[in-house]
View (tube, each protein chain N blue to C red):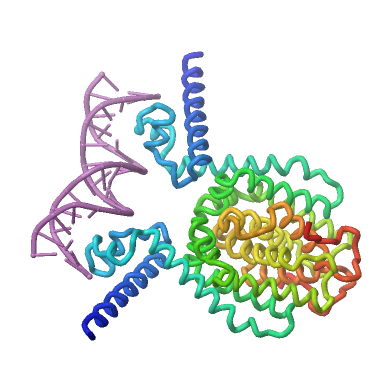
Length: 215
Length: 215
DNA sequence: GTCTATAGGCTGATAGAC
DNA sequence: GTCTATCAGCCTATAGAC
């Protein structure tokens, strides 16, 4: 029975090989630069062979997107254990932006390209990686609320959504409007996080984390 | 001498006609759906004729992008006169998001597609529409600083950049991750603005504008 | 200024031999 | 499972006639 298993294994390996090559092309030339012919040449197979392993180009895009999202989750892992929810939010924001700026083409593919891609990644169900990772944000605001650190009528879900749009805004605008934003992405994130969590820096500082200096 | 002028006028009119048709295609099918052939068919001219009026496809894209940006500026006009800088910022944010959600394909073209497009629009010089419209944000924060409503070490330019990334984040994430964000764009913008300007809603409210209720 | 015709590419996907 | 060959289309851009 080993022969069937070897064949299955080899098939899986080729599928993996194709996806790796596809990822390389996307990293080098962007998603627009990925074509079946180019991909076939990269793996040294005929174009038709790709269709044995993937239904079509969209399936490859979906799989790349899924894996890109997994990479992002890897950036979250080290910080989800931070006890203080405020500190955790700061760390998540920093990790999110570090991922986006470090993997621009992956980020573009997952969060800036086709709505179908992101929804394929985000809408797998209530237990899928998308919902779970978003829950990291929501839980932090819920904890703040439970600790009496938010107004009674504050909506944790909504605050989490806004927090996400904030860090997404930093990454996506940096990636598209290159060189218009003078401030580096990390500093923008820092200012966003501080300001969002504490409010505009006031003359009489209420918190030791205030500042937002230009340096 | 009227003949030359009529010819010039007719040429300008055709250029205009082409751009209008191009805009319609982009609004219907997105920028990816705009091709020279399709555009030629829409205006009922041969493809080659388009190259008499535009150097290439990129010039058309640039022009569409420029006009899209002008449309955005039109949304700003009614609110730049608001006296209180905080109220002005709220109104600008609202107008920005209203434009983006109301003209998704235009917004995509200008701010989410090719870095070349946005930089062609934003980097025309210190007096170009891009710099001037960004200055609307910066000036508001500068006024806040001048009125002693910001910490002495706060950087208006940086706050303006972060404010822009915030509203851009709302629009772009809404456009790409359709249906994942539960909150409507207007409510996200409202919560972002309030929270960014006042800080997280605290148990003992400092400001009458606080709230962030879930309704 | 506008046309026809075409060069010289690219694309996703499939039929059918092996 | 992999190949060759190909379908059926798309594209930008240009040469040269009128």
